[in-house]
Length: 73
Image (cartoon, rainbow, N blue to C red):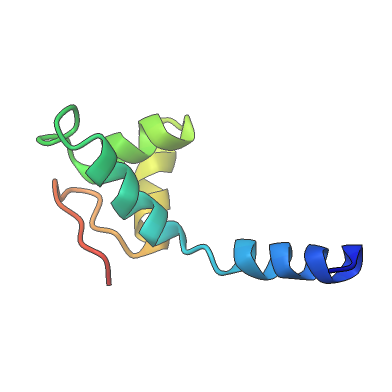
């Protein structure tokens, strides 16, 4: 495969990554530690943001920031 085709393949793969899916996987990976924490707390740790930005980020992803659960859609 030539370099241009490989770069296109990589960009297509990265463009297909859904932030919501990443968040679901993060919650699954660290389920014990953040089991009782609301989603905005997990976002704060995951993305290195403050509470206000984390709350807004959850809403941007279509995630309930107050919930302690998240399922893939």
